Length: 293
Image (cartoon, rainbow, N blue to C red):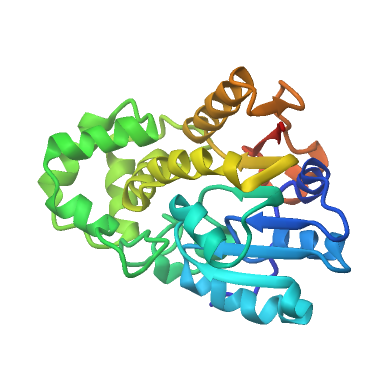
């Protein structure tokens, strides 16, 4: 497990958006390395409570140590936020002042080479948030049809050359490592991506497919209204257009049926200072909705 310090993305903006306050009750649906959870806990003392959820058992295990000082103020749960309502019910978080999502892959997962999320590190092709689930990335790459792989790359990575990459993958199977897949994609695309590594979209698409990220996000969002008390805030940080589109459409639909109030119609982006100090924040987009009575 990596020991480097992780900086949570847009933490100041997220705390302002949540209106985290002493005595409040909040849910962090994407615990990760615990940065946002810690920021919430600092603001809700005394008497506040936080439920921290992550599908990744390693993240929950790490949080048990890093957040231990907060004692009973924090409750940790390993599970997929697609089952958000059941998890909240199980742990007594039925009516909350705020729910936070920080979507996508965490810094901790990217920095743990053996998890196979990064094309910059040699590792087995895995990419699972929950290491007990199936399939992993290698299963998709090595057993799915050329058409199925092309569909995943186009649908989840918006990869223009999805068919070319899928064809090469099927030709070169088996492909078992991150470096081999990255090199194969680079052979197909050459230097067409400029500063962005040619394999970026392929790796993102496979990760989303492996973890059913978009389906889980839709299911989770649909459960948030019933878990927020009047005035409670839903805050979502996303990192690519597919996620952000789902969040935007959900919040606008919620505003149209008077379940939510959009506190701002424009997406909130990280400051230039944060982008400089934390490059992973550059694509972040934060949206807020407030629960109506």
